[in-house]
Image (tube, rainbow, N blue to C red):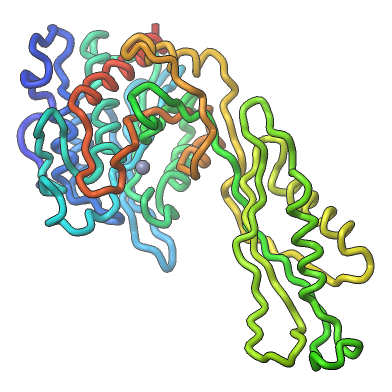
Length: 406
Ligand SMILES: [Zn+2]
């Protein structure tokens, strides 16, 4: 067992004067989680701790292990209280990336030490700290409301986010859907903020697509080019054409889509040989003006126009589960932004930047926004979070839950 004591222990070090309804201490919960060595795919006791904590507050808890050939088995977690709508889900992961050289840390990465007003540990911001704040906020809300929400609250927590993520959130959502679970909104507590708590809500992500362009020619002697067909000429023509024209001008929620070549390959080690084939690889980060299919069609059309009848080419597309998605600004994003403004005075930016996250799976089931701690130290040596941020994020989540069920 990696934790000790009660998760509900009063945070006298944090809250000088705890009010009668504010009993859960996010710092105590975060410390318990940080002391679990839950490097992907190890559960490390983190889910067990959440199970004990949430069962104690009346949640029904399900623990399940998912498998996939060639991948590690991973434990996952779903807890719900209430049976009625609306249903607000908090999503996240308790797995963490390895700490690297543990001696490089000022405080050991799995000790959960507080020093200089900051809580240290692998996962402090990504994202055990965020989970701790959500748990504390929900426990407080329940205590203040007779132990039951006016609707349902759930925690959907995976142990497979930092790895290859095949035994995590997607399977968990499919499992929940098969049971008839219906979600109305989700908050994913990933570290969304850039510099200060409350500066950024992620409301969507660009899609990502990888493709290969293959141009075929005819191999031959470099001194007799009339007897060969050099595919490098064709490749250069198509690469230039695809780079010349923007994919779009951006949309209301997203910046312009972007195609970037990442490799051009012939692999020819011989100086007097015209190669038979040339290849290029590229990635496209795309906005909501495209789908995966419409984007492939656009690229193939532009290449065909540049190639004319002379250049023989083909595209190979890598499978992608990273389509574009966004939550349209509206009542739910306003609710989150309002709670942030109340606690921090900041007006958050609605962002669609950055890489991909489990939100890409959740969006297939309900609207999802990402809001958690500040991402500055995630995955770094000395990952840490100011205790004040844990207190403030708990207050934000509490306001969200209170207003959601008001
Ligand atoms: Zn994360």
